[in-house]
Length: 418
Ligand code: UD1
Image 1 (tube, protein in one colour):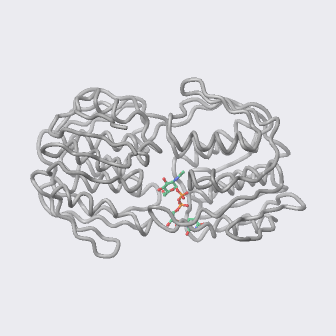
Image 2: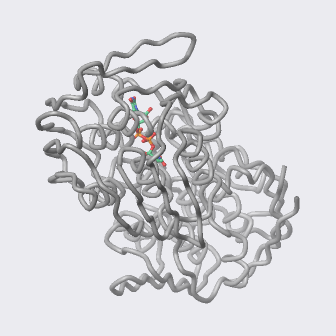
Image 3: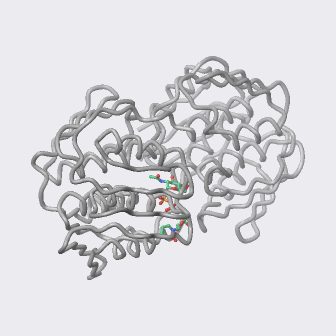
């Protein structure tokens, strides 16, 4: 099962190098399925979600090897196109293989992701977009059978919500479609721009990725390249929060401060000092955080839903009452009950959490219910008095690379038990 044992109360101090972005690495690795030849992807974090993505590529008869943080994929043998249920269940975001498989093979078969820890995760936007691009889709017993008998064709697609995954699937499928695709109300996350940068190095013609309107001119084929994944802004935000709540002094190396404006603004408004340099951030905190201005999770460049649980820990120990409004996923406040076991005062009304900060959390036994909630409970343990046990840390391992080692190097007392 696995758990972290944390003795709270240590001030975090020192330097940490930020891992490669999970949410860039996953779609880029999936997109290699649409490429003919060999791709070399650097700065891929060691995460169970990355392992699950490689398992899917291998199941499609691609060769995938890791050496350190570099993964080499050779797609020469790609065939099949069906992803078994067992592999789909390993990782919800495996729907990101839909676009690459349709581009490479003209067909794809996979199960619908269904609900997960943080909400329903519908895929209606992905499906509607693929249909607009000429894909026939049938659902049978929870399996999606997708087939593009005349190949993919470019289309005008307007998303009703800027879904990250749908934007990625559309961009990948459109790269080798006949004609041009115009996508409006596209997601603008930095990971979208990173995926487009990778695809363009493979010969794709994508313009405007990272903005609301993306134009993709179809090309006949993509060829292998190398690419370095951008730093993980959510992991970076997690370490900054750890420093803020332990009145610490932490320098983040290899990050992109401009990807983190919303989180940095929040930390500054909470009373910490954040110093930006080119690809570094240093946070210094000397006193208890102040109450936070209302946090509303929004598509990028708004406040990221993936940093909401960490923000809640900051609010839980701040001086005063803060409001946190979760607008992206309907079931993403489960950590509230666990933080309550540690002495946090939080009420939930619908998708709003009203957080009355307390002077001190107390150590307790709590359960990680999803990736970001689990990481936030570890943060809470760092600030709490006494011992905290965070159970079910397999969720944390999906997204945080050697988390306990990095925290321990900053002075935290944390260990993993099997
Ligand atoms: C990605 C991230 C995840 C992050 C999320 C929002 C990856 C691997 N995961 O997930 O960490 O929390 O963006 O920033 O990059 N929706 C629909 N229909 C659809 C697709 C989405 O209604 O067809 C809804 C979802 O239920 C959710 C919202 O849109 O309420 C956002 O989802 P989306 O942006 O697609 O998130 P993911 O790509 O799944």
